Length: 304
Image 1 (cartoon, rainbow, N blue to C red):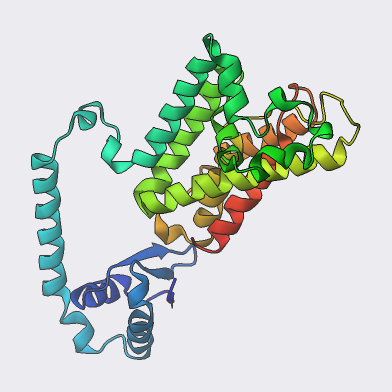
Image 2: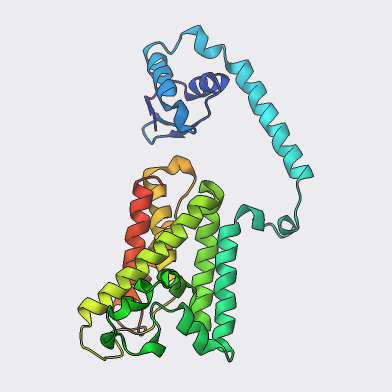
């Protein structure tokens, strides 16, 4: 947001003026009749804010209305380009009305890997898959008898274990729920923020949420050799809560970025997290959920 227009000052004149100078805006009406002015490109913020100040000082200056014809031509040209794009650029995924793989490769690869791992878990290779991808490997003995407890394998060089528990799922409902939210949230983020940022977010959120869950199990369930202390946790839910927290904060703080969370989905996801903490739905990696949410909210707050 670069500023506001009071009631009685035409926002369209300012919008045309800025567009004529190559600066795209979004102007939202206020209940009191005024307007809120957003600038699309961050590089134009300072220039647009100066133009806004000058417009507020002299809204009847003819130079502000002189840009209307040029702005109209720019809009027509953009509409033509959009029609040509929609006419000529067709991929198989478009026939179904959804985003293509090219628009969200990181999201689709993540979901695909989780599905492949789940299939392996249901096969004769299930125990081996869990042993190789879990945060720690039970085949080498209980964590209490190992030099670095549950971190022994990771500190021994198996650093993939920081991330790969995210691919493990322990029921059909578990993987369906997680893959659905990864697809919905991941697609929105990747299309708006790019595949590289999406990849960093998934890997970072997975590693941090898994570490937080490990620390929670070690510190708060510190009865040696109890199964509840180091159970094999897994799932995309920690990452999903990071994606949710990111979209939530971006929508609240930076709505001009186009990432918004429906309030009903916000209630559903927060309510589910609280329900999981009650223990009514069985053993859940609650610390991973909470840690992922904190990571995502921080990244959204920082406008990553």
